[in-house]
Image 1 (cartoon, helix red, strand yellow):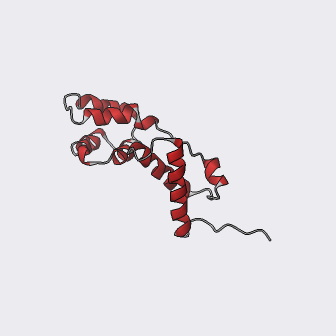
Image 2: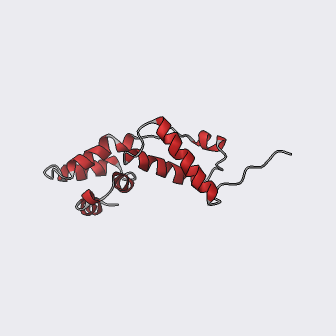
Image 3: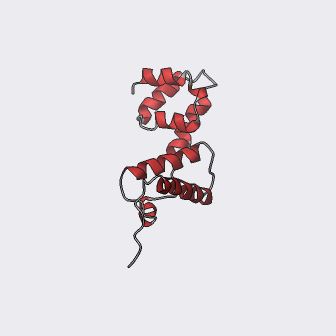
Length: 126
């Protein structure tokens, strides 16, 4: 994504959820983001959103690690990425604010995946 594309998307950024903004900006090199940031210095409606991404969202991490998912029976693969995306979105959108809330959300996500057949059924011991 080039600076011009970012600039055009930022024109309507106020209509996006924080996690949608994060998804747009997360893969862009910081030097590009700072260059675009410079062009928006005079636009007070965009700057707080942009600053939030650069100073907070880009540093956000989940408490859940791949080893936790493996212990919970999630096979390594694409589901990890989906789970992390859902957890990060919840953090960034302010839907969760603690490790305990993240664990609760993780339980709900895994229950949905289990219900829809995305997780392998647990084997019962003989």
